[in-house]
Image (cartoon, rainbow over all chains, first blue to last red):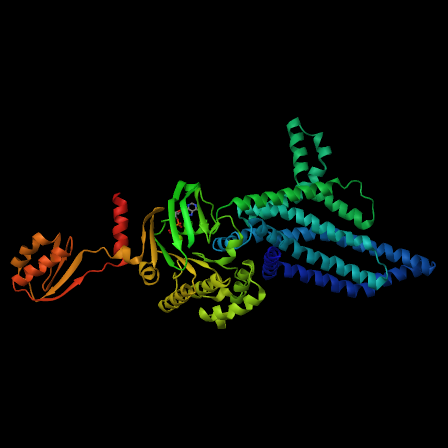
Length: 279
Length: 305
Ligand SMILES: Nc1ncnc2c1ncn2[C@@H]1O[C@H](COP(=O)(O)OP(=O)(O)O)[C@@H](O)[C@H]1O
Ligand SMILES: [Mg+2]
C-alpha cells in the first residue's frame, strides 16, 4: 500500500513537472483550439456540406444522408488519428526528453535515492508519469474530437477510438528507449536525437526486403535484419493505427507485440543500469 | 544500543582510481550527536552516501538502526540533508516538504501536522507559498533541514549543515539539534567547521584521506594538553634559565611564561623554583586546546606516519 502511495507521489510529481515546463500546456492549448475549431466549423461546414451534397445529388435523404456523413466523419477522424500518431509522438518526445536527465541532476538524485524507494520504483514512477501526461493529452484530443463529431452528426464511429491505445502504447515503447538513453547519457539532447533517429529509421527498416537487393554483402543483410528485430517498429505501428481507424483488417499483429517486448526489455535495462549506479 | 555501525567500509571510485574510504570501522551510539570531521576530500560525504544507499561500497558492511544497508524500509526512519542539495525549482517551499515526506511514506495527516511546526522552526512559515526559485542559499539550507525532519527520523544525517547559514541561523540549528537529542534521536553531522562541531557534538571522529585517524569524545580529543601559562609580576632572565631542567619547553614573555611539562610534578617544581626566587605568581592556567588545534596535530601526525 505504502509502496503504491510512494510511486504515485513520483508519478504526480512528474506530471506536475511536465505541466510546469509548459510544453504540455502548449500541447493542451493546441488540442483545445482544435476542439473549439471543430465545434464551430462542424455546424457551418461539415454537416451542411454533407446535407448540401445530398440535396444537390437529389437522392433519398434518409439513406444517403447517413452514408455520406459517415464517410466524411471517418475521413476526418482518420486524418486526426494519423496526424496525432506522428505529430503527437514527435512533440511528446520533445516534451519528455528532459525528464530523466533532470532527475539525475546532482543535489536532487542523491536525496531521491536516499528515500525509502527502490530504484526500480523511481524509474517506473518517472516513466509512468511521462506516459500518463502524454496519454491524458491523447485522450483529451481524440476523445474530445470523437465526442464533438459524434454528437453533432449522430454518427458514432468507434474504431476511431482504437487510435488512443495505439498512440499511447507506441509512445510508451519509444519512451522506454528514451529512459534508457537518459539514464546512460544524462543528456536531453542525446535522448531526443536517438528517439528521432528511431522514428526516421523505422520506415527504412520496414522496407528492408527492397533494400536487400542493393546490398553488396550478407553482413549488411544480417545487420538490417537484426536492427529491424531489436528496434521498436514505430512505422508499422503507425500503419496499424491507420488500418484500425479506417476499419481495414490487420494482416499481422506481430509488429505490435514484438515492439512491446522490445519496450519491456529497454525499460528493464534502464532500471538495471540505474539500480547499479553510484550517485 | 548502536544507531550505526560500519565495518571495514571501503570505497574505491573506478573513474580516477580514488580510494575515498579505506577500511573505516566506526560505531555511533543511539541518542548522541556524532561529528565526522576531516578536511575537504577526506571521504565524509562518501561515507554518508554509502550509509544511505546512494553509493555502493567496494567492500565492507554497515548497519543502520540494526538493519543492513540494502533494507529499504528502515529509510523511513532516516532523515538526510545532502551537501549541495537542489530541489525542483518549480516547487514552492511547502510543496518541497509535501513531496519528500510522501516519498518517505509519511501519511497526509502527519504531513499536515508537522509541516507548519517545522516551517515555523526554520523560520520559513511566511515563505511556504513562494517558489523556491526565489529562495536565498540560507533559506534553502533551512528548508533542507525541515525536509530532513518531515518523517520524524530516528537518525538524522546532516552533510555540512551550516554551509551558507548566518550565525543566527546556525544557533537556531544547534537548538533544534539539541532538542532532537533530548528526544532520543541520533544525529550524524559531517563538517569541516570544527568550532561548530565542538559546540554541539558529544562524539567525534576524524577522517583523513579515507582513513579514520582518531575518535572519541570532544574532551578526549582536546584534553591531553601539557602546556601551562604562568602569569607573574616580571621574571628575570636568569630565573627562566633555572627553570629549564623542569620543563620540556619554555617560552618567556614579559610578565608570563608558557611551560610545556611532562607531568604535574614538574609544574610544582616550577612553582617552587619561581617562589624560591621571589617571583610573584598571579595565576597558573592549564592551556586547553581547541578542537582545531588537536585536529591539526592529529592530521600532522597522520602525514608523518
Ligand atoms: N563520484 C565520484 N567519482 C570519483 N571520485 C569521487 C567521487 N565522489 C567523490 N570522489 C572523491 O572521493 C574523495 C572523497 O570525497 P568526499 O567524500 O566528497 O569528501 P568530503 O565530503 O570529506 O569533502 C575525494 O577525493 C573526491 O574527489
Ligand atoms: Mg563533503
